[in-house]
Amino acid sequence: MSECGTEKKGEVSVSILGLGKQGLEDWVEQHGQKPYRAKQILEWLFVKRVENFDDMLNVSVAMREQLKQAFHINPLETVEVNGAKDATRKFLFRLRDGRLVESVFIKASQGSQGEQSQRQTLCVSSQVGCAYDCKFCASGLAGFTRNLTAAEIVAQLLKVEAESGEKVNNVVFMGMGEPLANYANLSAAIKIMNAHWGVGIGGRSITVSTSGLAPQIKKLADDTEAQIRLAISLHGASDGVRSQIMPVNDKYNLDCLFEALHYWRERRKQRLTFEYILIEGMNDSLDQARLLGKRAKSVGALVNLIPYNTVEGLPWKRPSEEQQEAFLRAVKSAEVAATLRREKGGDINAACGQLRLRREEEITAARLP
Image 1 (cartoon, rainbow, N blue to C red):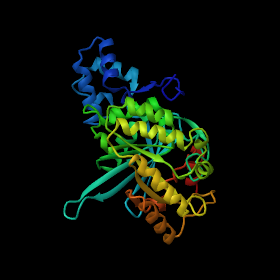
Image 2: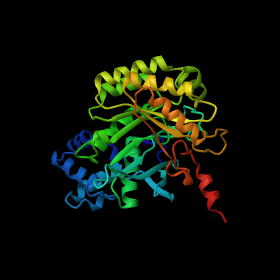
Image 3: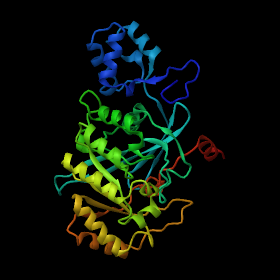
Image 4: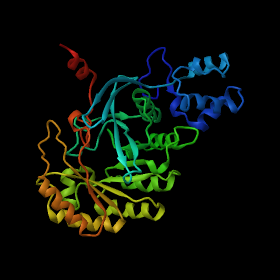
């Protein structure tokens, strides 16, 4: 079987991008090679970014043939790149089994005037589709297909940098899918992205967003060496409201979720973030705002308010700007840090909640005259 579960006759089965340092060292040793060969190969992959084993010039011809027999390099093909008015770009990638996933590249200045730097964020997907059926989100409308491999996750970053000619310095797992439902591949991808022998992105510049899988939050707190950040898709400050928006709340209610968040805080110094999409008439009351403020204060979380982004086929609307501002003031009254985030990439359906599971037939139909 291939790592995608759909190996075709004559194809190699595994992308070397997901192997990691230890896996590559083990493979090199098993094939009678010196350990330094693994370091050479990693440099070709993550520093020089080759996509062909024949370009690894300081690796012997015999070993290159062994590599070609065992692995392929990049498991993604770029299908489309769409640019928004605000310089956000959305990338559509085809996987080797024909499935499609989307990634979003976002540029934003940060820092004080005169000392501004450019935060270049990549929003990566972790699954093809999503099984969690959050009611505001496009990603799960067509259901869940499969988990992405570690190689497919990492390859999104490498492909975007290659296509854009720019360096990603911030990664958020906020694309298609629930990252913590793909725990093993998520962990492996984070290690590769963070490692000095890999992509080399600092742990504090990697954020994992979850709909609230409490056991996996605890596991992540214990397992991950990198000082990554955690964001919670909350979207409701009481069980009654949250369950209407997020079915996962029926399994892991707010008491269960916050017990896991306190566990995280005991083991981690990084501030938590609550993502809260404002939906008119659903979760935008001032009572919800005040309760949200109290909950955020209990775990020292930053609240990130996001006005709902329109998704075709869903009935929701965003509150008026006046209501958004009133909600923000009510959250802040609990003496917590809160922001109101205006959308980026909305004109290309790349904003929060708009990434959609697309099928190959949709792409073909869209290109017909």
